[in-house]
Image (cartoon, rainbow, N blue to C red; front, side, top):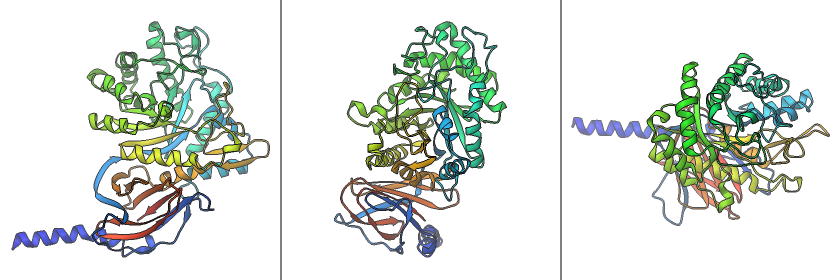
Length: 476
């Protein structure tokens, strides 16, 4: 009898949270962004949850199981490049406030909480620069004066707008030219062996300099796109070379300078070679102890498609290693294609796939660009979620801004991903449970078809109409 009572009590406890949200329909919200409509993160009518029945194959449904939890979510954001900073300061004070509100306000904007910035110049800088004079191996001339004009003030304004939530990591595109075998910041090349320690010290000097002027540095990546010889700033690190640099130079140098709390991110390139790099680095225990996570980009599509499963494979093989997307953008830039719906759908699909495969954070590329898709000193122009026309002081939002917002506005740092499943390949879905107890469900439809679906949570179900080429966020 005691065992029977215990079973009945357990059943009641499990059922209670499943019923509670159904009894509080006024707290449920649904937001939609859809092609060929004026809906952009727009609230829509909520229909009540009812007790669910056994679903059948001819019914379309999204199933969410909040009792099964996965990775902890850290945040979503973008890159604070020289281009973004310079463009920001061409705007009027009123437009600057609007921009900050659009990105960092949780209620009126999309609540960004993650960021990245460049060490030395990158392609999205107006010119090439470093922080030391030519040949200064001792780093006596190290000075971030260049960044104090635009980039540092810009980052600090964004941090203030985010109310201190912004986690910032830093990435180099290239060491100074004199440290490389091609004597050039551009066109790849490699770090010369005699500068390994100097370059490790350079990271420390940069972090200290930024923190001295009020920009806390949460983490760092070893090298942006280490297997790409680019016409812009770039530097090649093979897997073995990155292993050596982390294990013998950068890792120990961070620890020596009491920076072991800084999150060290390896790889920072595409998904195609993600597992190979993870395998090489993480099977070496001396290197692995320094590595917090593996970063990756989304540009592998040039070789025939996106290898989402590689993220999953790394998570399966190295479950304690954090995975995060560190860069993504749509390109090439053109005002003629500014409103193409595929730009937003690229983000929605990648974010759902990455989160479902274990990513803890997701970082877009430039958070702001001008009317040329720059500034960019090598003409490598691309799209950003927000563009400013410097000629007339206007701000223009791409549909990608809204697609990103369907995640960043509602899924808050500290959330845990929960199980979510769709019984139609055309409908992509992911779900999270926030620390305040709210459940966030995102559903995306890339097709021309409209779906009449049911959202099933526990023993409850809610009917939902999903428009063609749309993305929906449900908060419970």
